[in-house]
Length: 558
Image (cartoon, rainbow, N blue to C red):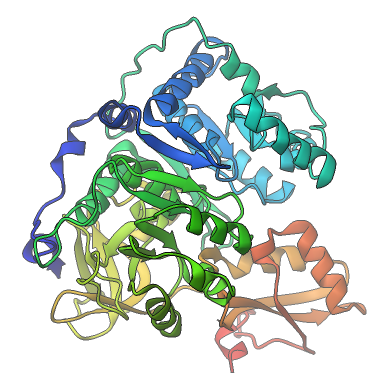
């Protein structure tokens, strides 16, 4: 077993206690904003919004929730947005009103949205007009009392908003009218509610977020993250980022840095990084709605003197492959953080040669809010590892068959204890019980080794989970969808290595009636989010099975 307090990390042994004095996240967020006030907190579509403005808007939204709806503390609100100025405002406002945030991928199909809404029992949903066409199919099966619609440029000043609206509506023709009645976020915030926001009594043990992740059965599970979990985890990350390097130099200047936020905020990695940790450092988070538009991303990299870029392997590859990336200035780039999927060694080496900055890989899980370990700001970064455990985090390696502790430099299943570890899975006692051992250690399902210097190396996963560009994909979910096709007798899904996405999905199909690759791909695109759509399809006469009729996925890898 290894305990962080026994490891010197940036000359700080313990978590930064400042943030832990607050009862809930709303208190911490407002205290941070009060400290940085008129400094820019977020930037989107070339418009900067200050800490004070963010809090002011979030108060207006909280007042609406408290006085113009029947929502009460503890109710769930779905947040289905692209990266935008609206995201922090909605989240902070919801917490202020005592609501539980349910992050939702805006690219979800109506079927995927329905599963998450039904399980979390949301009472309100805020969504982008870009994806409004799916709302009708959703509410026909799960009526939602409060539907709030917003557009990417909604919070821009009029003189900046109109050109973007023109582009969206008349050039790209991306927006379809919402097929059901809904409330416009701009109308809510324009009112500048005369109501004061009533204080809601909350404690660190209250739920702040339901963050959905897949399960071994393929059905998404709602990870219960409390205010205390998230307060602890962003304080842990803050301690690492704001510590001093081996020479005693504090590299990150509070209230003076710019940080590139290209990963989607609905993903827990970006959510905790940008809405909490980087907010607490007083940095300006430059929000990017479409990280796949590499040309646009590079134009922003040229515009801002950024200190940190938070991404994952596929994002770094897309930048490195662009011919104009090498023309960017990296003078102030001190920290490139990687997580969400394994970092490929060749990616790290190429990034270093172009930017002169090492990629600092970390490790986390949704169930851990998510940070378990982080590499410090260079020169403390150790390549081919995921760094050291964040403060006040205990780790142990066990033999997954016997439960016995495995010594250092030997492989074992990684188990975690710490204040950031979830309370359990929403309305799922069976999965919750299975996730912890008898002593309360969370079992990650990942095989790792802990080196003599305390750094951690992740080797492989026990579970069948497939990680595509940082997103968890569970074979059972895809198989369940494919098996419903009238021409399919049975199917099986595995992950295969992919240079671009880390892993790609390969689908094996036994046909009942004649069908083609294109037929199945079209069907999958209709019922699955894009990153869950198989990249490869192989038709077979049969699949390897156990005597009990369970598909032996491991034999499909051979």
